[in-house]
Image (cartoon, rainbow, N blue to C red; front, side, top):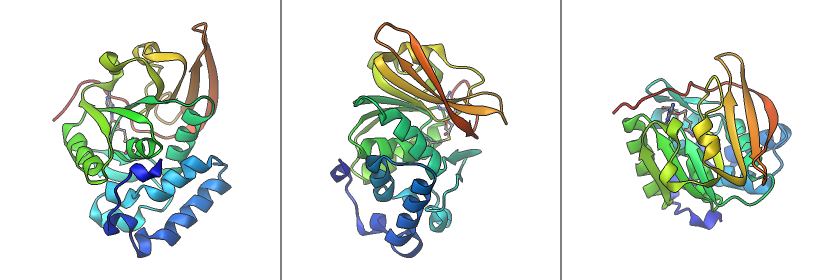
Amino acid sequence: MIARLRLQPADVGMGLTGQRVRDRLIEDLRAGGIADERVLNAIRTVPRHQFVDEALASRAYENNALPIGHGQTISQPYVVAKMTEALLRDGSPQRVLEVGTGSGYQAAVLAALGLDVFTVERIGDLLRTARKRFRALGLHVRSKHDDGRIGWPEQAPFDAIIVTAAAPALVDALLEQLAPGGVLVAPVGATGAQTLLRLRKEADGGITREELGAVVFVPLLSGMID
Ligand code: SAH
């Protein structure tokens, strides 16, 4: 799966972007309860330092969120790992929709795992930078500049949907675009009181809901900007 990535020497990294700091991050994630080897392997391989500003590259393998401009952040590796693990836990999703491309890192992790990734971002400037990163890594990710709260109806249904910005309540349009058996992972709740939810749409259309813990995300906003 990881073979889908086209890695240059700068992606492999060295020193604070190299193998040893990445291995340390992986051990951190394991200690935090992440057990899916596919997810750990993808996080070890995808060069997170290429998804932040050069000035922050030396901090890319710390287990922290980092600023990416426009008041947005690249999610903490632990949160990326936890959400990805929750998406893959049962079933083998193929088509996955991400709402909130941001840096493109979460989408790259999903693409490295061999999923067909569709991602939507409302800030044009962030999306353009993310697209350059996908191209440089040889990753095939389909993306759209839009308000992701409407999902991507033309490409629905999806086996999995991941929302990387928090809404006060679940977005119905996204649940509707989930295939039977599909899984949606999203932070829901007001600022300061967000919970990561995993929802599974059962074959009969019923929804099974599970709470995965407290999280901190930037808000899911309406409309688009350049
Ligand atoms: N998955 C990203 C996390 C980025 S932070 C990463 O790996 O870097 C959340 C992102 O969601 C921000 O870029 C923000 O602009 C975007 N966002 C917020 N509301 C949105 C909406 N309604 N539609 C699409 N993107 C949205």
